[in-house]
Length: 147
Image (tube, rainbow, N blue to C red; front, side, top):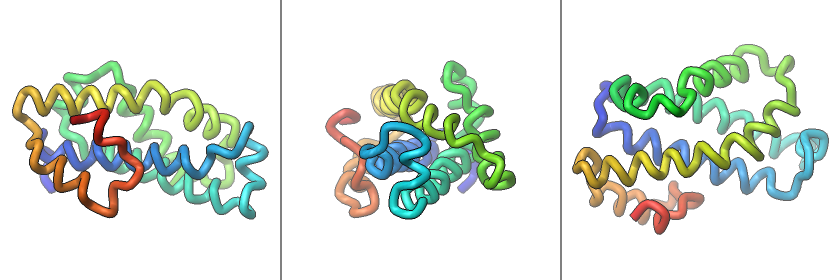
C-alpha cells in the first residue's frame, strides 16, 4: 500500500494486536530472565518477532500522521525493529522486557487515541473497523476502547 492516512488504520490496528499478543505471551513472567526461560524461549522469540512487526508497521505509517503525533517516538520504534532483525543475539533482554511491561502501557492508549481522533475527523472509516472487529485475526484488541 502507498503511504496514505487512510491506510494508516490497518497499521495502527496491527500494532494494537501485536501489543495484545505480546502481553499475552509475557503475562506470566516477572522479569527478563523468566521470559527467556519460559517455554524454551518460545514466548520470547514470538515477542521479538512481534516487536519487529510493530517496527515494520510503523515504517509504513504516513509521514503526515507521524508528524501530527510526534509525541510518539516513531523513529525509535523503527530503529528497535532494525536492532531486533539485524542484531538478534546482541539484544539486551532487560530492555526488551522494559519496553513490553512499561513503554507499551503508554504507547497503547496513544494509538487508541489516534484511531478515535481519525474516526471523528472521518479520515478512518468506522465500517472498516467493524470488519476488523469481526475478523479472527484481531483477537487481542479491545474494540470497545476504540468505538
